[in-house]
Amino acid sequence: MIARLRNRAGQLTAAVAEPVKSPPPPRPADPGSEPAAGPHLKLGTRRIPVILPRRGDPRLKISAVIVALQVLGQTALDFKLSIAQILVTIGVCAVVDTGVTLKRQGVLAWPASALLTGNSIAFILRASGTKHGDWWSLNGIEYFVLAALVSLLVKYLVRPGGRHRFNPSNIGILWVLLVIGPVHVFPQYLYWGPLGIPVVAALAVIVLGAIWVLRAVKMLPMALAFLVPFTALIAAFAAAGRSFVAIWSEDPISGFDYWLRICASPELLVFVCFMMSDPATAAKTPVGRTIYGAATAVVAAGLVYFQPTEFGIKVAILASLTVVCALVPLIELAARRLRQRSEHDEVPGLASSLRTLGAGAFGPTRIAVILITVTAVVGTAALAQNRDLIFIERGLTGPRNAQ
Figure 1 (tube, rainbow, N blue to C red):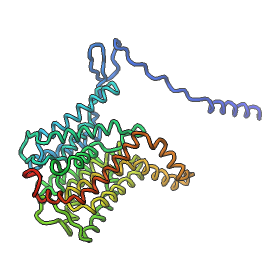
Figure 2: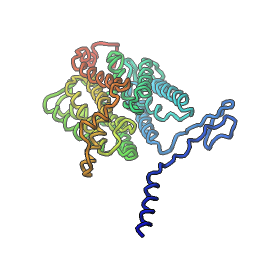
Figure 3: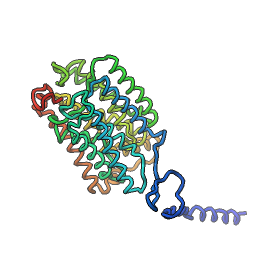
Figure 4: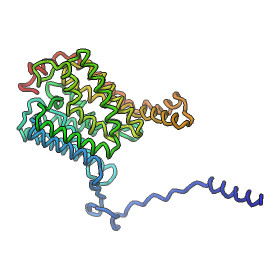
């Protein structure tokens, strides 16, 4: 009996010790062979797989919400944006993304991410001098194209660990706003107009779209983790007497209006619900996403506090996402440690964890992440000292009818 048990134990040990063999990788298709299952595009003897949009892709949902807001902006909300600017920006992103994917992966893929990137850029970025109703104006189109190219350049080249770190449209818009400057470009206003039918319709689209999108990507707690501390901090700033000037108001915005125009702005809700919620750049775990939302709120409020202009406040909010996206690996490390503590698992030492996380920290892509993050913070802080920006917000300098 004992001998049989020993023999059985030996068999089990050998079975466990024996490595599991992975199936051999599929052989590439012969150009002359029958195409694999799924749609293909045939170019001579070459068959290129075609990846079509998936019905459940959350990026399509976000795009649908942004398109609905674009329609309202063009018809009822007096957005200073042309249809041509929208189409060119989306087209540039789509062409570049499709070309890169075809070159790298050998497939012709529906550019869902690029279409969303282009649409987001066109939704937020504005070129000074563009008037509502100039449907086919290409005024300042070079700035939209530049934002699109910067977005995709950072997405494809700044990939520490094989994963792009920054939200593409966020980094493209922020870079153009900081480098090109308020004389030539500006972000869509925080204030979309009085609380009439157009603004109520826009808010309804944003709220319903947010529920539709955030539930699909499991980001509702993240959005709340941002909104609760951010609105509380802005309320404290309003109580402390902070104010800002904006071209759409003759008087400085202060008191309750300071809180209302920032925290109830449709632009802020779009930022939180449809830009911060990008699963590719946000933290992955529920705890990590809560930390990610709260950290972005604190950084945003800290950068907003010193800004005396609407331009500076909007750039500060955008810059906060750039900063926190750079910190996502640290956020995920903190989330793992919290989970291990709650499950009473052995928690590795903090120094050991940081050494593992920082392995290769001085590689080119990580250096690029650091430079981008520092530039975002320094550039945003410099806006608070830019006295010319106050005159621009007053409409006293820059191109005629600049904003």
